[in-house]
View 1 (cartoon, each protein chain N blue to C red):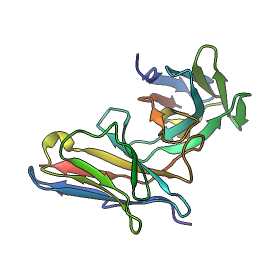
View 2: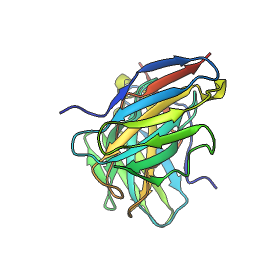
View 3: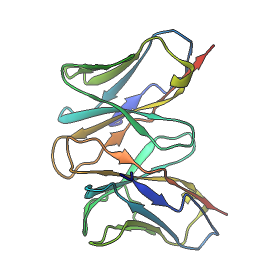
View 4: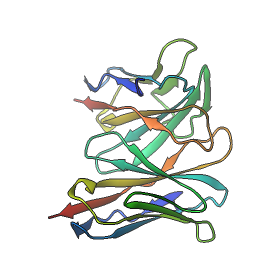
Length: 114
Length: 111
């Protein structure tokens, strides 16, 4: 039973390029959460999605960032025109339902903007 | 006031010591509480859920104090392998909410 799968594990982008981060939730999980972690910082909530719906995007920067979780396929976090400040670890978590349940994390994608 | 706050530490303790961490939360409607462990440059891993009555798992004990709005984690007989960052996580028991994490408390156990 595979856990939460994220790819790529490491991603290097030049300033101005686009970054696409993928997350496949655990089997049976339909809720996906994206978090960003800067060095020496905590996990910052970005966005919460269910299949084909964005439930809460209150943590997403207003520009350049978007997320989707289509009916088929993984959830995608897209960062357009990356800047050095976007360099961070991006973690995806999934849960079978919202509210009282715990969430399980993928291994993360480490984005480096050069 | 931040939603979830933790003392960042570091807590430096010898093997065999007992150490306790607290985590305060600001939203009195919060219903679900968890402790996660994060090793350096790895993903957070669920350590234990925190129930109203408190719960224990081996050397680890979690407690919830609703009146004062904090949860605690007690580690007895610390091992070198317990060295990590411990994150508390909170969410409200309703649809449409995600886990909110504290910044974590760093524990270093030495021999």
